[in-house]
Length: 85
Image 1 (cartoon, rainbow, N blue to C red):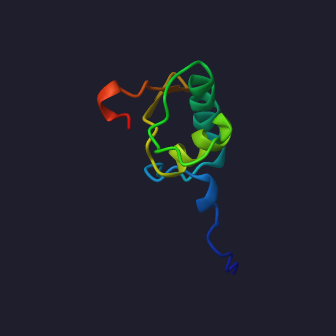
Image 2 (image 1 turned 120 degrees about the vertical axis):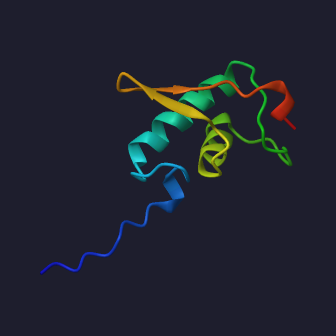
């Protein structure tokens, strides 16, 4: 009988992801970072200059990035202007 502890990947998972998939977190954060590099504004208040990848990972970790899975591809939705800080 194996008593394996649960995976502790909360630092790299999306809160509303039932599978707690690290792969999904990386894809969502990468796509969000690409949006930020393309000129989209962050939904986090910026207290200092950070790289877009760091901002994207923090947004994904907090559940601020909306995404959906279509035909086994993850699509990251744009953040509407009203929700930006």
